[in-house]
Picture 1: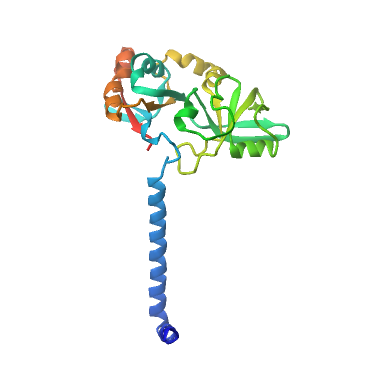
Picture 2: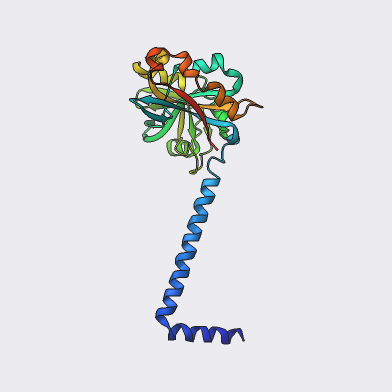
Length: 265
């Protein structure tokens, strides 16, 4: 009986080719669009799920007013970090300064690769919950240390043991590999984090970075924070909203800076 149904269906398809094509093509397009939307929604809902502390991690944003126009962004001055540590530390478990993601050349023997990574303060690994495969979790203590993603370590060292080896950074700095961490998934704010170097190293590499320690007007860095236990995002935002305005001089206050923590999850 089922065989007869197929025969009848096949005859109808051959008999009404144009009509059948339109229906089948429309069904295929509809299914493709539905699947695509479903994959996109799933990707958005699972964004940053890799972070174990996703619910309590936030990035600092600031809003300033220039010539009557408000602008909001993630560029932060270095002095804000110390201001938060000294006067708002109870609100946070981690306060982590970070460079922007940038490309550097990493060299080992005859292999020289250009990959993106960041410089971060100690505590970044714990805050982000990176999965350490080899080496130590606190691998950013020494200025000449570097932590590599698993794919980066594989590309540089092949089957060799990477931890304890020395590589060249931009053909200039000798960096000691202290750890290898699991690659961060693509649907993540740090998906291109192929290496992490210490903040201590970063602030000594260029004079303008070293000079920025007390410059409230030099908005050239990023700041990530993890809320302390039993502290809500609303409580922290209320506390730090005017932190920069209160601490900076009149030359900064004229821009009416306000701060806001935006959750990563």
